[in-house]
Image (cartoon, rainbow, N blue to C red; front, side):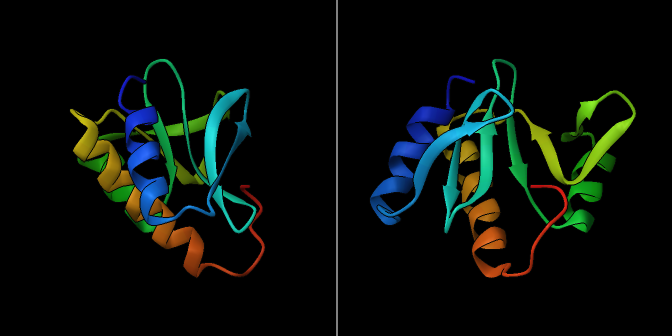
Length: 108
């Protein structure tokens, strides 16, 4: 996704300790060792509360993230931001969720 790298670069100014890595064979970003977003050629995938994922999918803004067809990852959603600012907003939302989450997750 063309906006992902620019958004990650902007976010790294605010959070220089965040790390880059690979998740599901894609470039991703994590905080405290936990991934909160990664990018594919088509979209950005962010980790958000399950209710927020349902909201985005229901509104047609997001699509379920499935590692296998028919098996969506409950707290991950695929979005296609319109620009860098939109991408950055999703990354900030995902980072805030993951940074505040300190219990283990089956979806990571």
